[in-house]
Length: 269
Length: 118
Image (tube, rainbow over all chains, first blue to last red; front, top):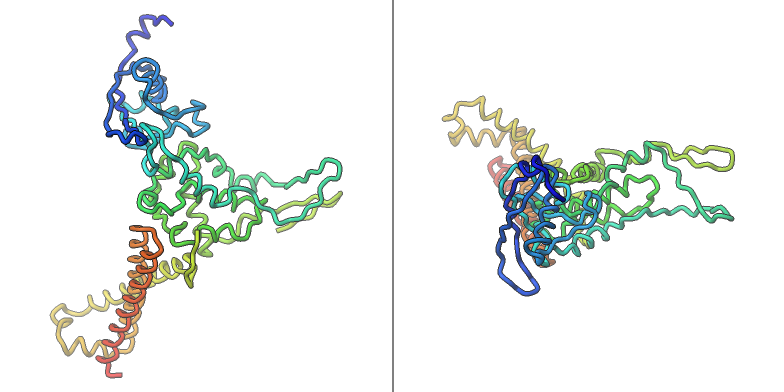
């Protein structure tokens, strides 16, 4: 593509300072500096891919959707956990952009980190709807509908936006010292399923009512600050804690659960 | 996540929050009582002993002792739990902090009882 005069005048350059390490080879750690051209709309991911394409293809990064939907490209940009595809260079307003791997995750290579423990914490909280009801299914279609009002959905909707990017886990100071702490992502997802009226699990809260569970959160709020999807994990954790302390009642069922039985509507509280 | 304690962590934290809030009120009363007396008088031996003979003041002191000990030592337990995560360390911190809590409450109560002459 040939740049016109306006685009040439507007093409600036920044220095991309990238953390380099290869744990598999037990290599030393260092920073590489790359001069990268950028435009008003260039994201940090674009800059990193430019480096990989034209300067140094050995830089290891993880990315996929390029639109803040998959959560793969999480990294520390100028010290703050961000999604590289969602961070424009122009909004950082710095001549040097420092890219480092996410904190609180073991490093595999360069900007790629190991998410195994993070995903294990997520699995531990049983992230699926559990129903104790025995239901009569439609004999032909073999399906059953769990009715949920818009008010019921509103109770957990924002927490369902989580893309498991790990930025909150990286920002959490408690995760930095306590590896057994589940982290804000797992706790927020636990609230997501707890607040879901379809879920009837009795022991979901017992999973985190533990020495290293939900009570080790100190309410720093860094998790909500860095979340790119507006999930607000700190809110989810506080809502769970207030319920566990008995301060708030079981309000996930305040909206009436309506069952349709033939022609009759039965309201259940 | 396994937990084998007598109390659930949520129950322990409830106690922690209640003792913290209650301690604020009781300590505030204690401070106000000190402020209404001239400083030099508050340090005199006979005056201090006479305070220990006052049953209401004794109850306030005992409350402060229990509330602050429980809240403080549980806080230390929480801080120590975050330093390391293994069974031996966790059991040790629980035993040490509870023992220290009981010892301090016992010693403080003994002081109050002895001075009061009960």
